[in-house]
Image 1 (cartoon, helix red, strand yellow):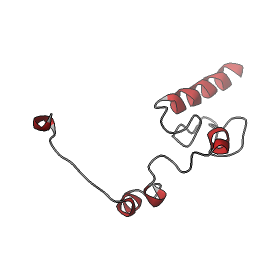
Image 2: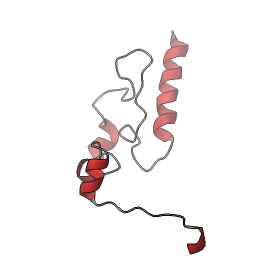
Image 3: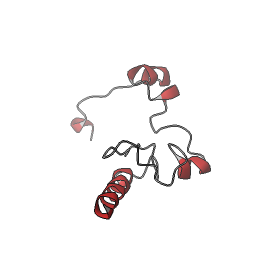
Amino acid sequence: FRDRVVGMAVRSATEMSKYNENYVGGDIIGGAGSPLQTVFRPRVSPNPYATGIPGVYLCSSSTPPGAGAHGMCGANAADRALARRISR
């Protein structure tokens, strides 16, 4: 396995915050994963993916189901966008 590793980078939490200002305190997964934030992130709304701008949706780890469920945030946002388009 060591023969296949071509590089490595190490950053502290402080360095991560400087690298990307969204990584507050070095947190790369979007903040606290409290039970309320699991349901109501990034804001309290029946559609947490909608931005209020027609055709613009959020699909990051800050939207349900949150970090760790790779791809589901985007799939859920796409479902909402398609449902809105079909209902017109």
